[in-house]
Amino acid sequence: MPNIKDVAKKAGVGIATVSRVINDSGYVKKETREKIEKVIKEISYVPNEIARSMTRQRNDIVAFILPNSTHLFFGELLYFVEEELYKYGYKVMICNSSEKIEKEIVYLDMLKNNRVDAVILLTNNDIDQYLDKKLPLLSFDRRFDGVPFVASDNYEGGVLAAKRLIEQGCKKMMFIGDDAQGDSTPVMTEVTKRRLGFLDYIKEKGYPEMINIEYPLGDYIHIPENIHKIINEHPEIDGIFTISDAVACDVIKELENNGRRVPEDVKVIGFDGGRSFLNLGKKITSIGQSPKLIAEAIRRSIINFYKKEEIENQIIPVYFQEGETA
Image (cartoon, rainbow, N blue to C red; front, side, top):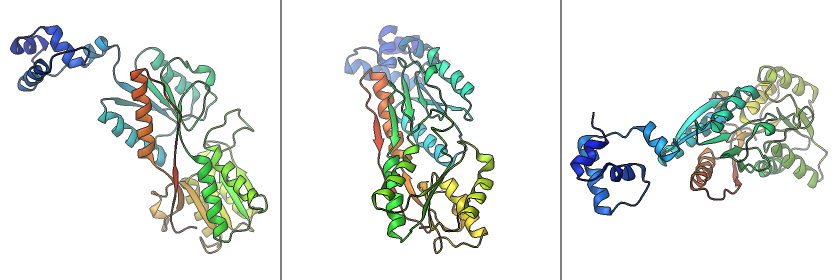
């Protein structure tokens, strides 16, 4: 297998010059660089990634800690983040925390131990005390003091949902979601703003205060029975906004199992974009967030980490996605 000495010998330059070209770590004349790159291609030389990372004191690996890789939107976001970072020479390490804080702490230690260059953190846990904010950390949909973040405009999403239900003639509205934050935990995420935007707009327009149904965060196992109880206890509701498309899907199924038609009797709006759950038989009307735009914002932040430039917080616009449920 060809090595760096073979490249240097054939190109008629020193090993240090070849190293500067490979690692892009210093000035090399254009014609010399082109000659070296031509030789590398001719002899099929593949640089040693471990050696390169030691030379540059970085390995171009970014860890993405997320709570549930099977969640449809998270999976979609992960796809675009990996695609976007790969285009710029970075590799993504997927860290599925299963919402367990002990796993998140282990993954964060990889950054402290220089095993990864940066961490994208998506968490609902009370983990602030474990964050070394001097290190390159980027949060998604969550604010920590001293840590830059990227988030969708969740508040505007709630406003858009309320506007649509009111335009469709709804009088008695409800929010349903696994967002029991602030009561059982000090954690407040950007996702909470979906509910707040919805509630504020309804109040502003003078409608009766909505019914706000929240159940324990991450309690995926009991979602069906929670929703069954909620639907049966509130037969007067004619408009529902849910924290996600997944919850919207369960709500629609439960409504129809109880003889209530969607959207004729009850209008339902989800959040994430309505791209999934086509097996429901109808497309969910939803507030869309763009995983591609989010991934581009994350990539901009990661590049600025490497450049040691200031990183600004970024709020990504949401949009109304037409469907058949509202």
